[in-house]
Length: 112
Image (cartoon, rainbow, N blue to C red; front, side, top):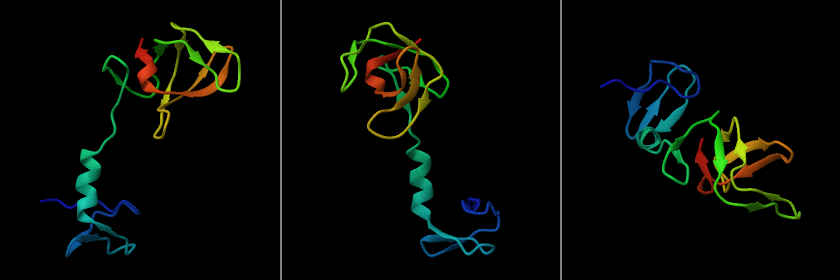
């Protein structure tokens, strides 16, 4: 069984110490279970139709969206290019032509 490299310095010479991994070069310690959970918990973003989204995709709005604090509405069918996926309440960070920078939820877009 191969041990993971140190997440702090990248050293290959890690070893097990009980329930922890230890790096002899930088003395960084991290739990073994965290490594297993991190691999399984890789976040996958999906649009309203279940298609997988990645950074740089283009999406289209499937619902009119009102801008909070404004009377402006972003219409259905508005195309958004070069999205960036983020963690948080809203999943997509983007710029919309004529509106500017904003964040969207994946449930209101479909992959173009």
